[in-house]
Amino acid sequence: MTRLVGAASTVLALLLSLSASCAKDQSIRRAATGAQEELSPTEAADIAEEAYIYAFPMMENYRTMYTQAVDRTAPGYVAPFNELVSKTELLGPEFKEIVRPNNDTLYSFAWLDVRAQPIVITIPEVKDRYYSVQLVDMFTHNFAYLGTRATRGEAGSYVVAGPRWEGSKPGHAKGVFRSESNFVYCIIRTEVEGPDDVAAVVELQKQYRLTPMNVFLGRSRVPVATGITFPGYDASKAKSASFIDLLNFLLTQVVIPPEEEELMARFDGIGIQPGALSASRGLSVELRNAIDEGAGRAMVSLERAAAEPSELQEITVRADHGWEGIDGLFGPGEAMRSKYLVRAFAAMMGLYGNDAIEAYYPFGHSDAGGDPLDGSKHDYVMRFEKDEMPQVEAFWSMTMYSLPDQLMVANPIHRYSIGDRSKLEYGEDGSLTLYVQRASPGREKESNWLPAPNRPFSLQFRMYLPKPEALDPLYLPPPVRVAK
Image (tube, rainbow, N blue to C red; front, side, top):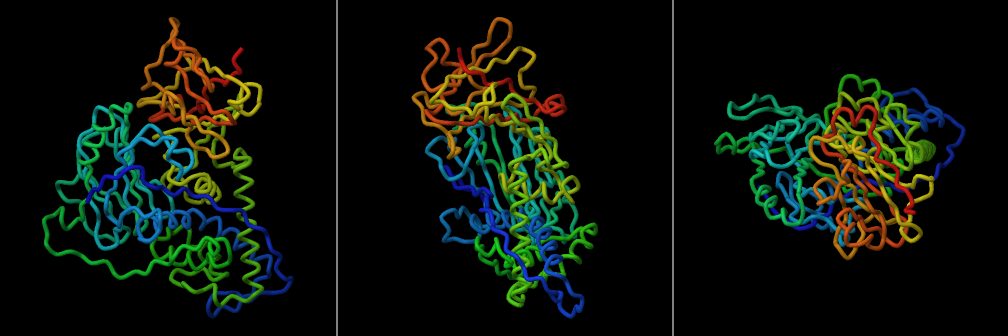
């Protein structure tokens, strides 16, 4: 089923920091049922820290799913499972529900329940614009893509199956994507050339379809998923020892890969067992305090990573002249498994990012002299030499966000981003100069003007389908210089 709506809510993942609490210096009996081994408070806190980092992205993903597809009373509720919803408006400064939204694409999205049967995604041929279909499992792994890059924009139907499905690909389907979880987030991004192009994209969105497998095969018998009770998401409990109850539920909805069995055995020591939905109620005060301490330490680790991402050895970070680019935050399970701190850091910064091969996002925070960008103090210019242009197969853009709210900026010309789809004026030598400032640089330069607020701001560069040379080394835009 497909439904079109206006600017709908999307929940980004951010948690408040926790204060570490000290556990008493005494032995704690192992939480696993029947086990007699004892853990010290330090050992229990260490396990809890590791488990919380493992669980954090899964819990944040669940919070989004619960809000958008389960809790019909939530302000952010969107639609039931297996119903595709499409936004029909480009986002602008009036949209305040998430930070750093994009102004490049229209979104379509759905939460898929693939417990009883697969869901078939059908896409028309799309050759005249960029689009992507991103499939995310409950671990937050990007396990499959369709679209301009992944399937060359060709029309087709693709089966999205759960981990326990034992069927085979129907002859008239082009492929099968197997999720390691019972629930999947489907995110479709479709390029918009500009405000006048929105209507054409909306017509295209109407051709995106989700179909249950039995309907796709023309069968009348409908498989029924076994009953499930979704636990409510409680932010305060998710930041305490009670997080193990939510994790124990989530572990029943995924398949644990063999390489994580040893990890699960270690987590068992503090009561983490798939299906033990009330494990935290039986915790002693000492064990609960130790788990609280471990969860608090985990959040400190995430905040430290946010302050200094270059300290994460499993990602690539390049920073220079006020710009910073990161690769390795998102990817498929085979790339992200065991990178638990990276996975949690990515969820903390913002869920559902693309693999860098699909889209790469350097961001600018300082001018060439190292001072924070501030439209109340300076006008700025950016000059791209001909050989410094972003190397992309699709398109690039740069969006303005005011600080500290990280929202788009209202301005007289209603321009919130600028890029190669804009009507830019290039120099005779092939160079490009952009003007980033509060007031107009003059009518003859307005085609290259990105309006800034009368306050601090930051810039987000987006490169869709970056070429290999843009990722090795990571491309950074030219410095933002104070105008003379």
